[in-house]
Image (cartoon, rainbow, N blue to C red; front, side, top):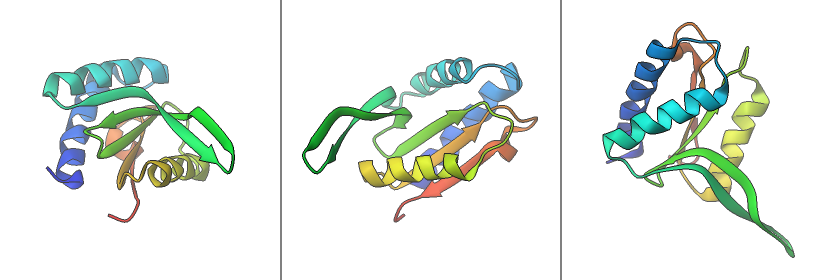
Length: 125
């Protein structure tokens, strides 16, 4: 399955979660319910996956944590904020570059319709 096919399925599942929960909850609530929904689809899901980081001689076992990694092909960053900012996009792009994953989804669940809160972030796709 390609990254684009995978992202289409994942977005559909996110919309189902959002339509049941509505906006206004904490990011952790959306993440837990979304992970549960993705696990039910049978995908390989890693939640709060620690990613090591090496900078010159500095080696961090957990340089950062990805909210959700699907099939080692798609990184999902969950937000529940008033509006997405450039720094959120930069965060996902940095995660993609450091992990060499090609596609990320930045999802803000604090919107009336989830389709307005989803941004695709591409790294050499």
